[in-house]
Amino acid sequence: MDKHDFDKVNAVTKLTLLCLPYSGASAMVYSRWRRKVPQWLDVQPVELPGRGARYAEPLHADMRTLAQQLAHEQKPRLTAPYALFGHSLGALLACEMAHALRALGCPEPVALFASGTAAPTMRADYDRGFAEPKTDAQLIDQLRTLNGTSEEVLANAELMSLTLPILRADFLLCGRFEPVQRPLLKCPVHVLGGKADKASTEQLIGWSKETHGSFSVDMLAGGHFFIHEHEAKVLRVIKDQLDVHHRRHAMAATA
Image 1 (cartoon, rainbow, N blue to C red):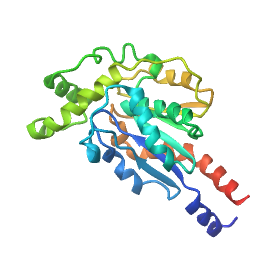
Image 2: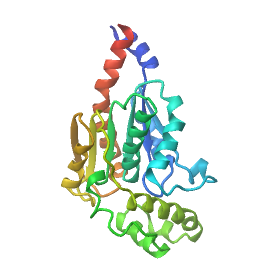
Image 3: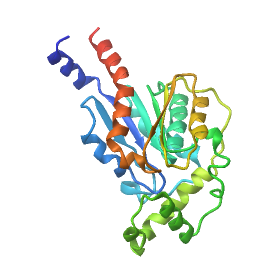
Image 4: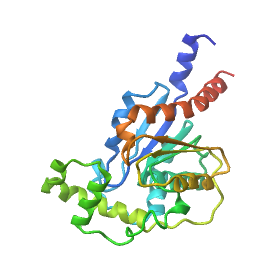
């Protein structure tokens, strides 16, 4: 196959990457990625109820109920191979969505990317203190600790009045999450971690217990928001891991 033919195949064999946001964020945090990935990778940020374009919808309090709702919403769009990426809260949600989509009869993702958080079975210490609602002051202190929000934004009362209820609900989603016994996934699981982030190496490696498939860990410089601090490196990891799946799909389409 020459380059012209392969480019034509790329146009009809895109791979979808569903991206789940972290606590307090909307799908917009991934909007830049669409301009920075190869043409064959279709980045689809997933908006959660209660924020962004879905601000009028109620916030969720249960991780699996939310994952099931999102799985039902996304299922009709998954006409091509897909992968799941999530950071922090989004990583747990992406994992739950993989199980929920499988329960709906969908193929498993070609890969699950879990970024910036402890594995589902390693959260007893990681989420300590998050099972009860936090006050506004406690939430603001937490934002300062994560180093992802400027003091100018934290001092904006109007903006905080919109953000803090979402953040409070999202922290409760994580703090009240409980792992369950069920058949493991079969897809590869790729973990990304920040070298200065809260999640320990042991907590990140714990993601290997979620699949019978292959497993890898990439550690990047930076704290909890390394996905923004080192965006190009994060996207390179995703692209490199998904390239083999795209090529396999493209070759199958021409067989």
